[in-house]
Length: 211
Image (cartoon, rainbow, N blue to C red; front, side, top):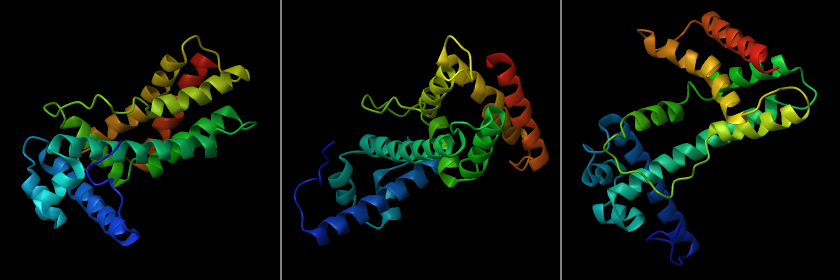
């Protein structure tokens, strides 16, 4: 989508503009996560990014569009991580139980500890008053896994009538239960042995239902 700064520029000016845009996104993400949409002002974002308020408007138009840009950037990072995990772990010919365990374990090491994921959860939880983006991509981590599950079903590894429901059950039995344990922990962490037990029990329950 064309932005206010998408007109032709020299390479040096384009690099400078991209650096400012990244600084604005970083500052906006930090402030939206810390204070929520309503309490975050464009003035505060500009000050944190060390740019003028006009520069923020030149790049994003308004606070609403900037918020959507922040969510879009987080979405892209998370989706890339999910795609990498699917490609690396859910490979053809690998024992399915081993592959699913490795896939979830990769998510716990590559996604859960990351500031990107933490920020994503905070942003989503704080968006009740923020405007919804009608142009936001509908692609989600579940859809990436749906495609791979469909291939596994075609190969006879899984059996289901609704691949979306199967993926939902998989995430509920594994990642959702692990996130619940993290949220309920006083220090926001889970013992590694307990985390492995949650993941293993979830994968085994899923396979009993869908294999």
